[in-house]
Amino acid sequence: MAIEPANPAPAAAEWLGSPERGSRRLLRIMASLSLGLGRRLSRTALYGIAAYFLLFAPAARRHSRHYLRRALGRNPRAAERFRHIMYFATVIHDRVYLLDGRYGSFRITIEGESLMREGLASGQGAFLMGAHMGSFEVIGGVGRQQTGLQVSMAMYEENARKINAILGAVNPAVRPDIIALGHIDAMLRIAERLDRGAFVGVLADRTLGDEAVHAVTILGERAYLPIGPMRAAAILRRPVIFMAGLYRGANRYHVVFEPLADFSSVAPTGRDAAVRAAVERYALLLDRHCRRDPYNWFNFFDFWRAPPGPAQ
Image 1 (cartoon, one colour):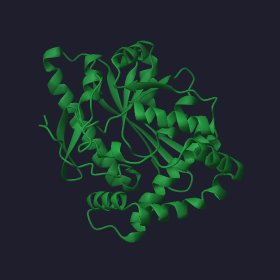
Image 2: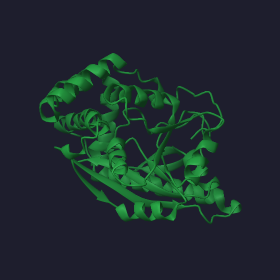
Image 3: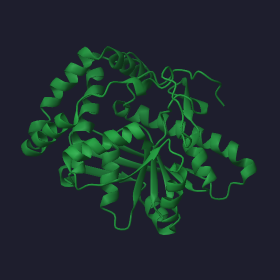
Image 4: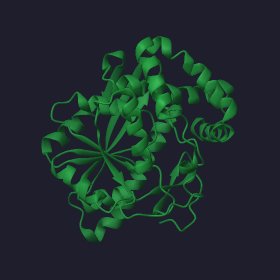
């Protein structure tokens, strides 16, 4: 998580170079059709979209195949590669209904709800560390139904812009609390939300390319995760909870909350070691959920590429 302004290295941050598919006008058209036709009817178009993506996005198709080979432990069949893309399309499509507050359209199960209740009761706030896995919107939907629960989202500015475009197309009345990273006051804004007892969500599996990273093992291969999110939690002395909103077919989602780290009593001299241990625990959780729900991983780029500089 970059607090100071930085110049990203495109060769390392491949996801930043992916072209934005669609425009605000197109988003409005898609949202109107989806809300007007309903989920069951409008999602039939997803099969064509997924097929188009599979045929005409060769880089993403290649990275999907390489990822599935790791997650499944064998070469994926064509139907499995299509299923991966279809899950991605479905999660994006379901954003429309979740942002519009149509939670009754889904069957949502929750694992670790007591962990969130304890965090809310403590009043000290906590970090929610997720990944580009499954649906963050379904987690936000669960949160919006809990009285007194405040969730802010810290994300890179480009992602914040895209989220605001989606919200403007779907439900302009929804105004989530988004903290744009890369600005000098980002850490101050995060600390202020935590002091109010809010949860701050971060997707901690991507970097801008010039951040400090820690080498871990995910799906049997070396990967490089940013240490910034965990370092911020350690500096602010807060607990960290892993989150994931896993899509499981039809209209079913499974929301997971798991304990990840607690920096409340970590001394400054032990901070670096505690941060590295937390990043490794995060990698273990990613590995576990990728193996259990392999079609929920939505990093369609070379996630396992080594960074240009030394890793910690």
